[in-house]
Image (tube, rainbow, N blue to C red; front, side):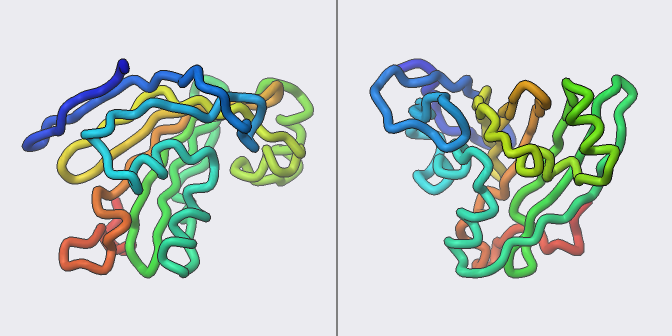
Length: 186
């Protein structure tokens, strides 16, 4: 199928589009969107594919894997020049950063803008409004040091474009080549 790519060498980046599967499925908690996605089999491990296709539950997956809490570090949350909001977060477990994310968020209705203005944190708006957004994975890629994904979360009141970067060894943080300690995050 489409979207299969070879492994990356050196610091070259493998970038792959993601194709939705047409096979029957049981649905997805994020909305009526289909969950079957075709990723390159030779480019990512099964555990990495789990994170690449996660629809809002990366924190829970990594926490369960390590049987430890995951901490979300809010690094930036501010209005952007184009009328939306920019947000940067990182996640860590056991003192090691394993992921960083940059989001561009646009509030599409006055009701959602009012909720934000009343003090609801930007990262909590979907839950506050009782809405499960539609998840769409747009592309994935990798280098020798990390892998990444670009996706969107959308509903009638808010649209988010998100780019997440994961440490290559996110599921092997106990090794000597573990991810960057949180205090060294830039």
